[in-house]
Length: 320
Image (cartoon, rainbow, N blue to C red; front, side, top):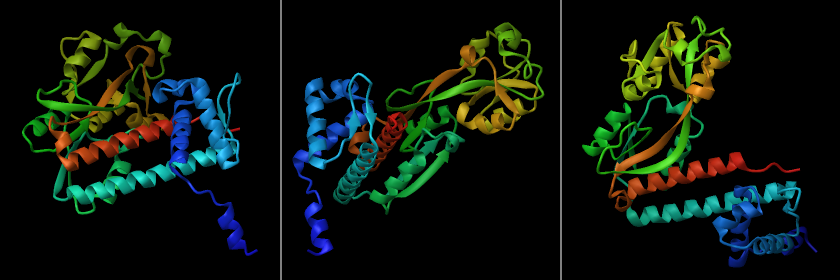
């Protein structure tokens, strides 16, 4: 028998029943276990276990260990999961490309962003743009950076099709699609008196003795946190705030992903994360009719899926 004949006979022909089993397996892995996937799948624990066993029998490999010891992927399970992700990624890309042909995803799409989002690993913006170019190669992109208030203003005025950011106040008449959360820490620079002070020696009263920065778009929040009447400096973007903090004369907020480069260099440090840190919700803001606008809808769907897939990858259990 020729080698090619042997390979052909050993190949697995995937049918609709296999696809259903694979989808269940993916949901279980993304959830981190059979029990955790019950609500999402709307199946009993025993049924999910049976489906996983059926897929294992179909593929001829053990995909995971499950039981009292918890859920763990085997090495084969990890490889199968990765291939399944690629399979459905290809199917998803095919669907979007065909949809793009039907809806003629041409023209232009104007997108507004906050500054320095590029350092945020959770944004998945570069991956979103790559996927968008795949499904709509003729689409012209216009990307602008603004403060949160300016972003919303320009969507309302129809100067921008959609914006991605964290918004202290929501403008009426817009739709908001939740994406992820960003951690904001309160920082001081290496030359500041608090830099070498132990965190347990720092409280809000001590912080109020020093110069505090307010962000123009979050000024009310920054002032309220520290119960001060006026800030000692006001900035409109992260780079300006970083300069002031690095001077060693001011205290202020920065996103953790943006500040990390300076933290690693020993130039700034977070102060009392247990008291001052908070999480800011990132959203897409666009017009309420966004679902009827093919280019906007495609961008929203791609970015939402990219962030969801990236988050699932971070939560994926390790194999043995």
